[in-house]
Length: 217
Image 1 (cartoon, rainbow, N blue to C red):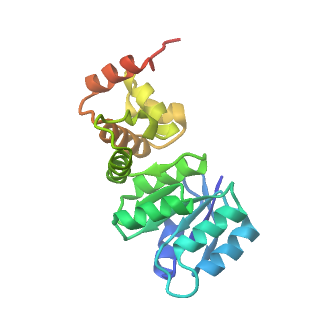
Image 2: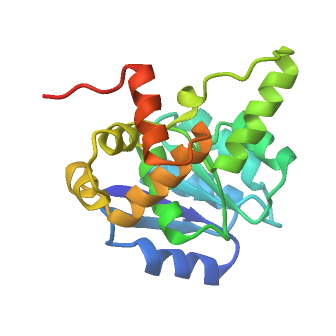
């Protein structure tokens, strides 16, 4: 089970996330916190695999500070920022604070599940738009004129879905192979296609061949 701590100052949000996730998709809500200070205490006590962290909490530490302190105290606990702030400044600061992922509260629940699964295994998770922002920022700072290979930005799960899809497996078959839902497979596939700038399955197969990713047993 993926053990999750929910940190948000709104009771309705915490209750909604608990109803959506607890006991489903191999996930268990082990605790809740309404402030950054409480988040640190609860994280130290419960040692969750994933902390769903809001950024804007009016009392005490904000989500950025709480993320930094949780990562310093519990490096094996991964923090997924769940926020309404669709802003580059917040995104970059969250990554610098040690967050493993950044997700908007408006994201569909299939994407949230995929994000939690990804960060729980130590991988990073950013939606395609956020990934492009980070890529552009990196290229601007490095002064590079040629685009970097986006394969490095794919999570481990997205790479697995890429290979299975390129081999010709349907979404349902991939879901069975990876023990995840079909909706989660669809989310991973959509994200990896956008990150790689691909449009069709033939494009994906051609990319996998060029990368030397296809092997058949």
